[in-house]
Amino acid sequence: MYVIQQQLPTSGMAVASMVLAIIGLVSGCCSFGVPSILAVIFGHVALGETRSGRKSGHGMAVAGLVMGYVVMLPAILISVWVVLMGGIGAVSGGTTP
Image (cartoon, rainbow, N blue to C red; front, side, top):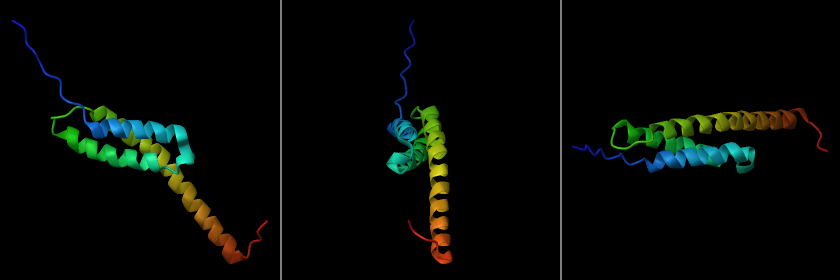
């Protein structure tokens, strides 16, 4: 007697999160962090899809989230630093080249 077990379908959002996170990691700041932001959004949606147990791909969703945050957090910090330094230069009367 054979037991046939059907495999759960993989969450498309988890795959998209993983792919966008890899693109964001490879392209870095050249893409302004847009793929990483999308990877984080899709990763959170995929976690909701895989939580019920009807779809697989929980590991891909987590990997997409981690890589997305790894690229997104430094981009936010650098952006804040650039804005603050530009404001300080404008207020202190910094010279432009």
